[in-house]
Length: 148
Image (cartoon, rainbow, N blue to C red; front, side, top):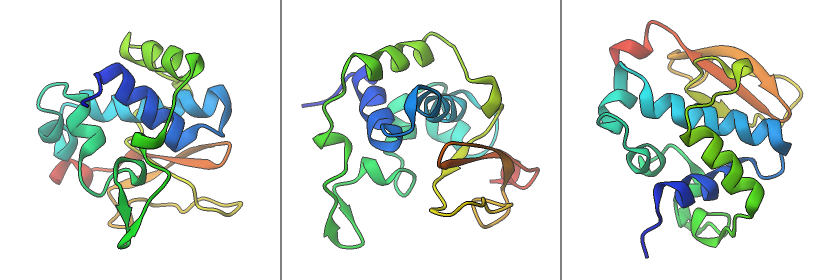
């Protein structure tokens, strides 16, 4: 069964940030939508003018979008999520064009599993630390990203 964009977005929000509270989930939704609508670089080509599915399912981007990780079954994936009203409300909020200002134009997030965020992510230098919200660090594109 193929999910609608709304359900796919609700599932990835739940999977990637379900334990991060309302603000954390909105921050992750903002990054996804920033990727969908960026006008330059890799994500612009992947989204092909606004395709959410292409962004979420891009190989190697979201652990939650894969059944297997490092050769082992990944039980925390979008197919095993059962989003509730909160996840759908945040998906609708993001699909309506809303963004969390604190995240800015960030195109990446990650949980460093430590009290500090790396200054760059991805580690090729295409993103620089913008902010931290709860357990996630958010990264804005550097000029290097626009060459991707």
